[in-house]
Length: 129
Image (cartoon, rainbow, N blue to C red; front, side):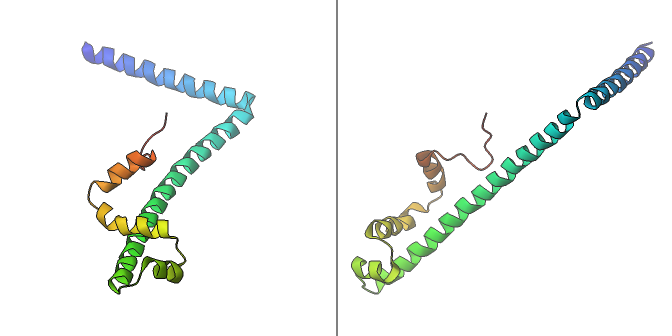
């Protein structure tokens, strides 16, 4: 007997779904701009997701570039160049060179978590309400 009740419920569910679909189609025929609006919303949502992924990749590229620059500065310092000479050679200012000299010490496993917290950056997959 339970099987018949389940079958009857399934028939009612399918009928309800069909009615909902028909009601939606009628509503869209009455308001064709609604369908275009829904498409625009979907496209904008996807654009946000893609842009956020691009942002995460760009942040990683910046980190990689800073590590490479820090290694190069370390090599210049190993050649006994003064910071003033490095400024002249690279075009970077002293503050940037000083910061990059610290990058080597900051590349530990916990640095990305502390940097995200310090800058207020959200992790790449974060959702904003």
